[in-house]
Image (cartoon, rainbow, N blue to C red; front, side):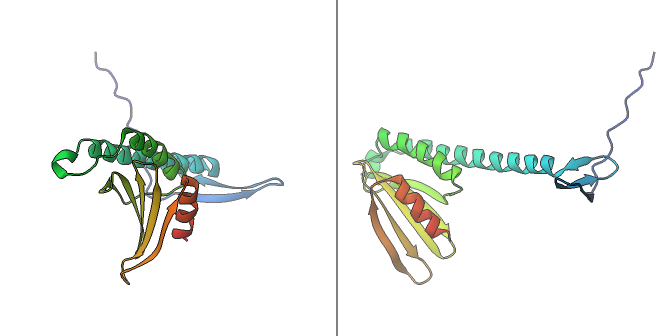
Length: 169
C-alpha cells in the first residue's frame, strides 16, 4: 500500500508586508503575508535572541583565546606567564565587558606578566593590561597621528568601564 506524502511547507516569502493597527492603549504593527503573522513583540524577541547569540559567541571566542594563551610555552619565549589568578579574573572580566557591549579586537599575553586587551575605535586603540601583581592600566593611542592620548593606572574594573564608555563616544 502506498503512503501519501505530506505536502511541503510553503516557501519563505521574500518580503514581509505589514499593516498598522491602533487602539486606545497601544500602537502595534502586525506583519502579514500569505504564510506568516508576526507582531512587534515577536520580532523583538527574535532580535533579542540574535543579540544574545552574538554575545554568547563572543564570550566563547574570547575564552578560547585565553585557553590558547595558557598553552604558550612561556619558558622558551623568556616571558613570565599570566598567573592562574589573572586567567580567573579575565574570565569574569570578559563576561562583564560583553554584557556592557564592549567587544575586544584582540587579547594577548603581556610581556610584563599578565594579559592585554585591545579595543579599536576609528583610528584609536585602547590597550588595557592587567598584571600578575594585580596592577591595572590602559593606554589610548591615536594610530593616525601616532601619539599617545592617555596613559593611566587604574585601581578597579569600574574605572575601565568608564574609560571605555568615553573611548567609544
